[in-house]
Image (cartoon, rainbow, N blue to C red; front, side, top):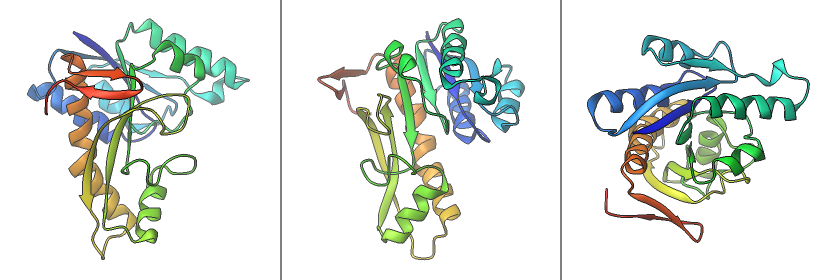
Length: 210
C-alpha cells in the first residue's frame, strides 16, 4: 500500500481529484495519510478534514529561518512514514534536504507543457497569462519528479489542452485543471503505486502504456 502525503497551499482542487480517484478505485493500492499546508487558511485543509485525513500546518511564518522551516517540514513528512510526496499547488520551495531524502519519491504537477512556461515566476495564473500572451495554440499540464531545480525533474506524463482565442487566463486555468491536471495526477499516483514507473539515467520509463 502506497502511503501518500499531499502538500498544498490553496483550495485543493487537485487534492479533491486525488481523493475522488481513490474512492472510485481509479487510484489503487494507495492510502492518503496526510495533507500538509503552509497556509493555515487553505481550504484544502477543510477538504482533508471532511475526508478524515490528517491535516497539518507547517508555515514559514512560524520559524525564524528557512532552515528551521525546512527541518520542521521534513520532520512532519517523516512522521507520516510516507512512500510518496505529491505537490499539488504547493507554492513554497522544497528544501534540498527533503529532495535528497525523497529522491524520485516526490512529484509535482505544473500547468504547462514543460519546458514551456515553467521555472522561476511561472505559477498559478501567471502561467496561463504567459501562454495567452505568447499566442500558443496548445498548452497543458505536466507531472514530473522533483529535483533541486525549478520544474526541472524527470517528466513522467504530459497532457495537451487546446487554447481558444476567447480564453481568459482563468478560463484557460480551469480547462487545464479539468482536462489535464485532474487526469494526470491520479494516473501517475496509480502507476507509482503499482510499480509501473522507474527512473533510469534521469529519464522516466513506464512499464506499459496507460
